[in-house]
Length: 622
Image (cartoon, rainbow, N blue to C red):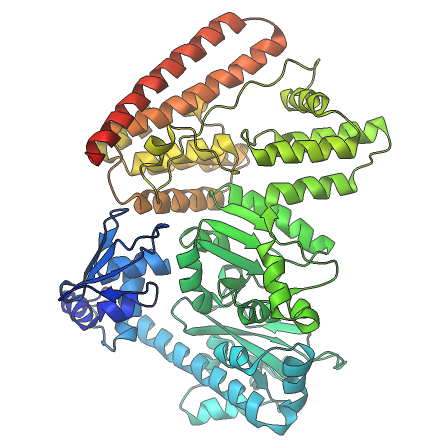
């Protein structure tokens, strides 16, 4: 990996105009010499408490204590690491970065990649010019502008183009510019002839082209589609750049360069299926939208998302493939702590079609009406269920149990329970009892479920949330796993005390998530053996994604978590463990008094810790 010189970093810092940089996110007003104020981009506020001192290249919020230099600001708002922030700032403020002494092989590899970036940029420029200037692209312009009702501005912003019909137009132009066939093959813009491997031709022909860029806006490949009604067999409806050193479809988020800043600022990103869907969403003012290049969200894409946002909004087609994709996305997001919402698109319609039929305002309204994934899942299940027979109702209840059961006490849970009870022709109390029975795995229904254990309410973005809420903040995220994830992230943000707790934690008793148990071992340098990991049904990729999410959450804390906060989070898991045993004891009708007493002892310990936290908070306010 390229390491830049300290002099390069200093020159970038000196070149940054702090007011110009921050005004892209915050409306600033001058307040004296070398002093500007605005509303903080890191927390909700009405009174401007975000202070910028341009000459010192520093910002500080008196409300949430966020502070830093230009690199910190870009890392926090753009979802990149320090190297990415350095490169983005250098590019924006015109500074040439100098690498420290490199291994010759690394230097050669970097030079090669720069050549390939230049080649791909040249190809994108060629295709874009062809779309707007060539006579043969007239049907493509008509399709995009009139049928899809996409505006020229958004098409140009995303550098949409047209690959001409001729078999070697790009090939010939790149040769003339000094590129060789080996480079064009590596960049994925040409391919070999099957009949004669020594001959090459353009990979994209007679197709609309959509350049795909990385987070810095550098073109890494293309997607292309032929025009509707073009029935030539040799021409694929959709063609992507071949997998290679520059392009991997599993990692691509189409439009991430355009959406990154808006998504990081909102903490939310919209996922659509394809190119024109993304263009339509941006045209509707939803500039935090990206495409997942199909219906399947991948672990690699999720790993990128957790570095950038907290909430994902799925805007996928309402067909069966889109609905199955939502279920797969829910599984991946649940492992990382991403909150998931679903846009209810009309049957058979995609975002581009809504814009074409009803205009951008209608699309924006449809997205604004998104619902939590759990509500979508309940409605989908009830729609598919056989509600006319007792057997069908029993099957629906078994399927509802893992969806509704983990939800904390909330208005959302009450509404979904009422909706399900009405659809199944049951009273709410009867449905609650049957759901508890189903979650317990059989036997006679037990008593009403105990109150769910409180969530810590700790989030890296708001490190004092546990104090402010008395430890009872609740969200729609699955409660148990969220609390476990919170504790592990807090351990990472807790210095030596946190690491000691991580090592001493009784993971088998307190962590219900196999992924998080494996992640804990990995963080302690005790990676589980491949066979043992496979036996749990957990993959290496799932563990890696979970660790990435934990490290991001810990980094966002911006401070060292206290020992009391760590103990508070551990006690919440202990309370959840006792509650699980208590539910089993109630079903078995033995051991209940002992466990009830243990529960009260844990709750007393929680109260003592919360009292200390409240005292600390009072001292801070004083």
